[in-house]
Length: 101
Image (cartoon, rainbow, N blue to C red):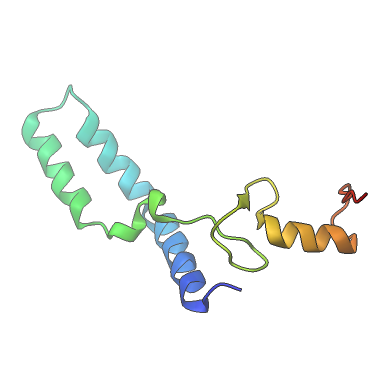
């Protein structure tokens, strides 16, 4: 089980990303638009710098829904390999058959 503080920090980041998504997208569009003047683009970059760092989607870490483990994460199932193996062995994941010989 991962530290609760790490899991909560990641959840806080996810909420911030959702909150500032529209503003970040709009400012980035202005900042990257080469048809606009340099001053307008620079102003958009300054406003973008005022947005919290944790509002950037790249700061979110994929974590297992079951254990919070940050590594060996399967995106399709939203869980780590360890949790997948345990739940698969118990027969709790439909369509998954753990082989043993």
